[in-house]
Image (cartoon, rainbow, N blue to C red; front, side, top):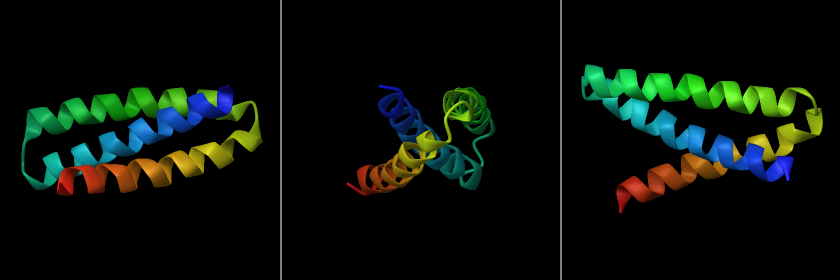
Length: 77
């Protein structure tokens, strides 16, 4: 169950990174600040989730890959 939670959190975190990066490039300060606050929240949750069990780095890495790929694919549609 923890592996699924870590995967989902990291997937969401990478979606947020894409939104943050796009906001920075577009010079949208308020939007970028909102994305940044969400980044800190999700990053903290992911870190807390996998610190206790190093094996959870595997779903963390898979979630990062899937999240970045999914965000770019979704935004290109």
